[in-house]
Image: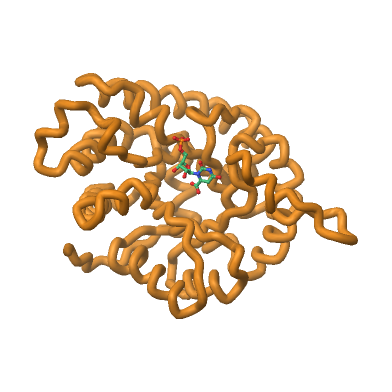
Length: 281
Ligand code: OMP
């Protein structure tokens, strides 16, 4: 087990600075599936880390954030966690990092999840599910400079099962109530919300509830969400968006040219983002 000695964090202003500098609000999802990485990498000592390292080298100029999804690492047991720890050490410190873990539990347990991601692995942020309520989220917000990214309206079809439920005697949906209530748990310096790119048409209304917060928007690329609509309806005066793409970038090719294809793909997204920053900011 590797021990991290640095407690790292990134402020809202620093994140906005990176977006302006790179003309990009791209988050590359490091959803590294050992079954999908190019065959020739399987000879490496740590194929998952080797893949991530090369993907980071290829895309770092075009993105402002990386989001490893914990499932891909946990599914490999302790070896997978070691690959994740090495990946976290490799990511440059001026890049925002998101532990996509969708955690949340009773207070003392949430506190330990937070220590795992913020202290042990030096992530800047973690995705958290709101279902267990305020006391399951606050322990994550106790960590100076760190961010909670709370699930609001997710990109999948099943989001309709609960998130879209109409609240009785109110004109609100459940996800709107989640946004309204939870925004007072933190502030725009430590709390973001997840809204799926496949739900871009809802962003206009969502911005009325949370005009200034950053939104993490997954679902462009493989899930078919529109970057243009997300930018048009979701951007605020500070950009306020981190748009994630995982498979469309990291598996743009599964051959020896996977790095040049990932570079091409991330550059393409970054250029489109540059246009929208000019148009909508
Ligand atoms: P691609 O569809 O390959 O771009 O990957 C999307 C990534 O974003 C995966 O890691 C998902 O777990 C994550 N995600 C969603 O796809 N939809 C959501 O609503 C929320 C997330 C997330 O929290 O990041």
